[in-house]
Amino acid sequence: MKKILLSIFLISTFNLLTAQDWSSVYRQGEEVTLNEGLENDYVDFEAFWKTIKAKHVKEGMQIGWFVWKVDQSSNNNNAWSDYLIFNIFANEDQMKQMNSKTPEWWENEIKTAHKGKTKRSIIKKYTEETLNNRYRKKSVIYTNKGLDTFLEENIAPSVGTKGVYHGIEKLNDDYVDFERKFFLPSHKESKTRLYWELNEIVDRTDNAYKPVTHSIFEIPNPDAPQNEWKPSFVEEMAIKYGIASRKIHGSLNAELVHFAW
Image 1: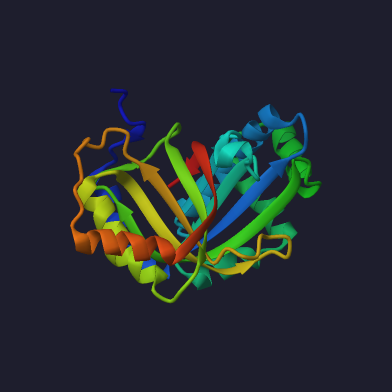
Image 2: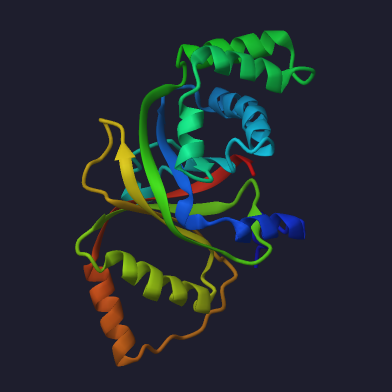
């Protein structure tokens, strides 16, 4: 079977991940729809931004940044965006500090991050394209408070990693408990997930989809053991009422194209 496109990082990287209090993490997820004909240029544009985001991660201004290309056959051939971008922050204060930066600060930050690495003409080009919003036809942003996260030991993302993004509506007050206390332990035991996160949507832009209250992002394990599962009566009831506690409004399959971590 094809080897999973995930790299084993240094043990210090994993120690950092496990030390993070994931209940305090904030994730800003952006659903990007591109202007027509700019697909290839956009990938290069985000590669330019990767240098800046890597600087921010190194300096402790945020803990991660990910750009995922959406498979347009997702959601029964009804994908609602072209790309997903996630900025990950250690806590709400860190997120607010980053979001408070002025355009002038960003212009200077771009120059500083690329100094000695990138031609001035390229820096000027991408700075102007950023300020003029050349690529985005539509941008929808959700602010998510992390509720729980599972990461398989010694696993970290690499370009080509495949993930799935779910938009979910909570239907009753038991929903979060079902995810955390039943579905997540089941994923761990069956080894069907390499990564899994549950978020509560605490804010969104005015053009965002209103019914969803939570989101899940997960990385399936393509090498998961094919064991036949025979649920007990109690497990069958947990599945029944767990599924009844939520409504999945849509799912997007996506492939990682850029990241800073």
